[in-house]
Image 1 (spheres, rainbow, N blue to C red):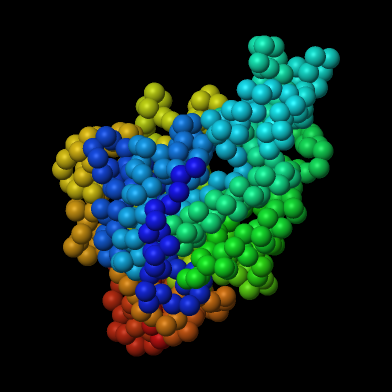
Image 2 (image 1 turned 90 degrees about the vertical axis):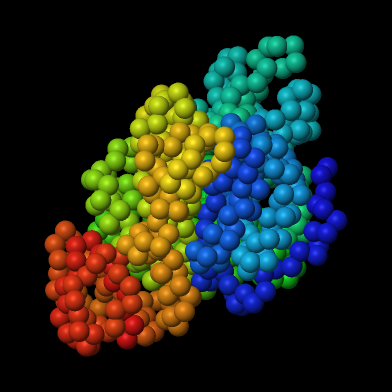
Length: 559
């Protein structure tokens, strides 16, 4: 079993971090495969991330969340993990991970890593041995192996379907080659679900937590946090549209009450370590109240607030999801989190451009309109109480790449749904750092997904120093957010009456105004202008003076 470097226990947390830092942190999501390539093989890696830490420090974020970099056959871009204690060789080594953590801490940045407890890779040693040993193997009890229905067991044990499309069951062959039991996989067949009712699974993940905490990480983002426990007896659902039920309706495959005792045991481990180590739930549940159960005082620290990310471009909808999220988290004493894009969803600069709503979009709309609305939505998000998550490249205003050829796509859902879904590759195209170069500064050996023509015009190099660029807007917004006493942590906003399509709310010494309509609106100026997502008409700086809030624009004020 791999061991952390001998010096791992000496890795200190960032100095000068505020108490309860996670209640107001801005956390930057790094998708390592697409962030920076340190060895020129076309694939991003940990040395590449390490080489760009100073950029993130200058951007003004508080922490990095790293998507999986563990040993994996890469059937689902690293979410099929064969060994949580080893680094995928194409992405680096354990020494690279240690160096990355140490350098980040030296810059005052914290490191959050992905943890994937719902399933393993089908190449995990437990699963391989379970297949090899056949029926009766004790290792099969650590997964969900069950005989099939029908006269000869030819039908799956129940009617559950995979989130990635198709059935959630795959039939095995016993060592002599004849058909055997079925195993459960709520995602790809290469990702068999663990059976969390077995004590060895719980023991293993407590050990994994300690391994990385000893390495110095500051927290974990828990993948599919709602999926670990299944309803007793694995009952049929009785419907065929199960993928559409995820996060909207109760399901026997997700959000069972038994998950909460698991997270209580994890919280006890996290609290043993100095420096306020945290865990963040990716929990798709039917209601904000169900989501809030994951962050009760003795469970996890944060949970993603997907209602904001999935909200359509509408002032009424923004206000509704903001109020609902703040109310639900306030009841359990947890901070609200806000996010607009991630590695599984269409980038919001494209999502807000077209008539479609929700978290996914396959066709791009108007680039200028989408970017304008994205900038406005970002300023709204960063003005809200709690923590915020940024997805790499959104600070450059990157659009979704919607015209990738079918033959280069690697999202497993694309193949399993015959091209009807599985467009996650479009938000995972490697980001541009320079105007010129074979991969716009991503690396010297090209990029694992092709970058669009003209990608360099959106690069860090191209936007740095341009006061009108999206990058400089993000830098300014994060600096103001850090400095202004009315921004950051909190659990409420004070709404002010405003015209239809306009949002106005107050916090301590601060006002945010947002116009979601396509026409300029004249409203009273609440104070001195701090920052605007797009140019605004002149104001004389006097409280109450009329000013013109332009279409699809958010403005910050100090009062």
